[in-house]
Image (cartoon, rainbow, N blue to C red; front, side, top):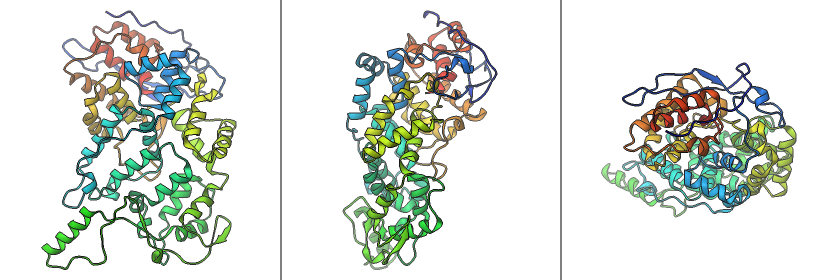
Amino acid sequence: MNEPVAKPVTKKRGLRRRQVLVGAGAVAGGLAITKALGLYNLPSVPGQSQSPTAAGVDWISPLDKPEAQVAHLLRRATFGATPTEYQQSVKDGFKKTVDRLVETKAAEPPVLAGADDATQDKPIKPQDLIGWWLDWMLRTSTPFAERMTFFWHGHFTSDFRKVNLQTPYIYWQNLTWRQMSLGNLHDMLYQVTIDPGMLRYLDLGTSTGKSPNENYSRELMELFSMGVGTFSEDDVRNGAKALSGWREPTTQAMYDALVKRAQEQGRPAPRNVTPDTVKTGIFEQQRAYTGAVKFLGETRQWDTKSALEKILAQDSVAPFIVTKVLGEFVTDQPSDAYVARLADGFRKSRYDAKSLMRDVFMSPEFLAPANYRALVKSPTELMVHTAKALETPALAKAIGLAGQGMGQLLFDPPEVGGWPANASWISSNNVLTRVNFAQATLTGMAKIPAFKDAHAVHLDGVVSPATADLLNSSPDDATRWLILLASPEFQLK
């Protein structure tokens, strides 16, 4: 029997926000959720200096302790840690761990077999694509780069349904987002604009000077760089003209499939299509708009790069991106002063994402008590952390299958605005699905790892009285793991 988990001294208050299912007991003869303690509201804490306990949270922030600072970093900057990763990071200390995470170049995932040659006859299977990425999330030697790839996946959105798995485009996009994940926003926006998957998803690949499509122009400014209310409808229309002229590339496999289909139908091979050798969009000047237009206050002849630089010259860009980053990694209620300070540094760095992320992690606000457990894990973060906690990377396929039921199927965001955030992930239905995933995972394991000090590694040893009671009364390690993984503390990061 493990030593009891000490109950923290707490001050109970009324329920205020973020409903999270606390967890459950188990019955003899196997794992089963038998005692739901109800939906638990976890408050957000206004004011960076206020103590969480004073706001009614069932625990006291431990972020004055070095090991808790490191664990907090790993929950935010990666998908959680295995016991070995945790111990090494604690040994290194907070600053050295930040340096390692931020400075290490992204490791490339293994090739997804057949993806580069996807065609109508041999499409990529969605479960293979999703499983490929999840497996890499669990096995990569550069988890921060993978976490940033995941962030940009939700910011610069595309989905496999419209992009179509009969092309390699959505697979290529994932590789591109990883390569650019810690680059500068100048290069990033250009790569996003000419990405074949994005060309198809937001219709820029069919936009011409004579018939400009406004979809990408609008979302580029509203969702990707500047924010709502920072541009006019004329800017959307003229931006579409400025960005026109791109088309999707045709791979050798796609060309061969076209030729084969033409032969089978007794038609000549297409004469206006040839294989391309690049994995980006192809610019054709004859398809572009010719002439000057007024875009964001300036009238001139534009091309893609000059239009993007005009966007990046807008004052709204830095605070917009910074606010999005802070909502993902620190708090969904950043102060105006915090945003302004980081935005100023972001501009001075020429929009360098690596510099921004270092500033985020080294900012006093990142380790402020008010921001401890202030964010809800997305389904992917929750399930990948579960697999890392149980040291079971083979769970990638199960995570992929469970994602849709939790509302987050990778490569398939619900809208161009991306995934929900934080409290939006919590409802009675998807909370039950989260608990069921933990139970099914444990039930399916041939050997469950010893619990040992798992509550210290994954929860900083800081739990509510309710969670402590359940852990202390659990009869075996399997039950303790279920309580930990289903606890409100584990749902948060």
